Amino acid sequence: MSISINELIAKREEINARKAQKLTIETSIGEVVAKKPTASIMAEALGLESSNDQYVVYNCIVEPNLKDKELQQAYECVEPMDIVDKVFDVGEVKAISTVLIESVGVGKKLNHAIIDEAKK
Image 1 (cartoon, rainbow, N blue to C red):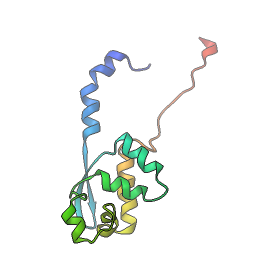
Image 2 (image 1 turned 90 degrees about the horizontal axis):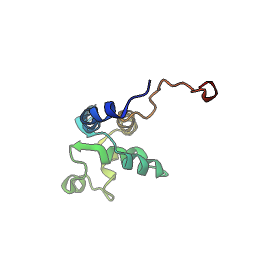
Image 3 (image 1 turned 180 degrees about the horizontal axis):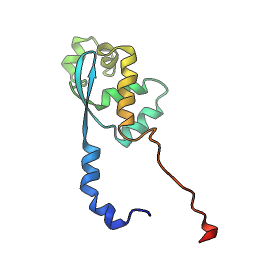
Image 4 (image 1 turned 90 degrees about the vertical axis):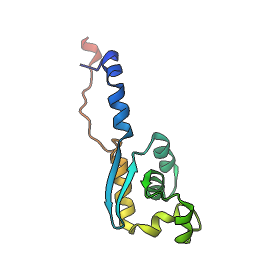
C-alpha cells in the first residue's frame, strides 16, 4: 500500500533532518566532515565531462573548508577545485565522491512491483 499524503506530511521533519545529515569520512589527511550532495550539485557534477568526482568532493566537504582562499594559496592552486587533488590521494577522491553520492540514494536498490491495470 502506498504512503498517504497525511503520512508524508507527518514525516516532513524526519525527511528534512535526514537530508541535512552530515557525514564524517576517514581519509589520508584525517577525518573530514561533508554535507550530502544536493540535487543541483549532482546535476552539475553529472554535466561535467571530467572532474565530476572532484566537483562533488569540493562542494560537499565542509570541514576543513576546501574553499578557503588561504588554504588554496598555501597549496598554490591555479583553480579553486585544484585543492581536492592536492590534498587527497588520487583513488581517494573517487572513494569520497562515491560515499557522498551513495548517501543520497544513488545506486540504491528499491523493491518494486508492476501494477496490472487490466485486473482492476
